[in-house]
Length: 283
Image (spheres, rainbow, N blue to C red):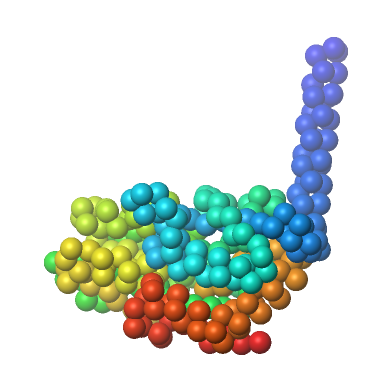
C-alpha cells in the first residue's frame, strides 16, 4: 500500500512539473509576442545579435579570431545611428528561434532568410539582400544538372533555408540523391571540406556563401554552381514580434544608409562590382 501511495505521489508530482513547464513556455511565448524591449536596449546601450560565426561572408571568424562580414558591418552601421553597440553572440543555428524567444539574444542577423514558417514565429525587418539556393559540385564529377545528382550524396546545413526547400520541393533535387536523404552539417565549412575531399558530390548552399568561398579558393575554376529550379529568397533581420520599435528603427536605418551610400559601400566591400544582390531600401 505504501509503495502504491509513493508511486501515485510521484506521478502527480511529474504531472505538475509538466503542467508548469507548459505554462512557462506559454508565458515566454506571450512575452516575446507582446513586449517591446527598445527602451531596455537603449538603457544598456547594447543590442545582442545571434549568429553562426562560420557563415562566409555574412559573419565569420578570420584566422586571427576577428569577427567580420557583410552583416557585421551592416549591423554596426545601423546601431551607430542610435548610439548603441552591436554585441555579436555565436549560437547554435538549430536553436536560433528558441534563443530569440528566451531573450538570450535580441536579434537573429546572419544571412537569415524570410520564410512563411519563420514568419509564423517571429517578426522580420524589411529585406536588405537577395539570395538563392545553389548546388555546388566539383567539375570533375560532371554534375551539369540537378538530375545528374542521381544516386550521389548531397550535403546541406541543418535548419537552413536550403534544407527546408529540399523537403518542400522534393521533385527538384531530393528525389535524385542517394537514398533521397542528404548528409546534414552544422556548418557550411565542414560541408565544403567534405566536398573537396569527395565525401559528398554536391552541396546545397546559399549563393552568397558559395560565390565568396569559390572566389577565394586556389582553384575556383574547379567548382561548378547550378541554380536549378529553386526560387530566389531574401535576407532580413529576425526579432521577437513584440519588438515593433526595434523593427522600425532598423528599417529606418536601412533607408538612411542607402541614402548616404554607406549600404552600397558595404556591398562593394564584400561582393565587389556585383550589385544584383542588394535590395533597394524603402520607407
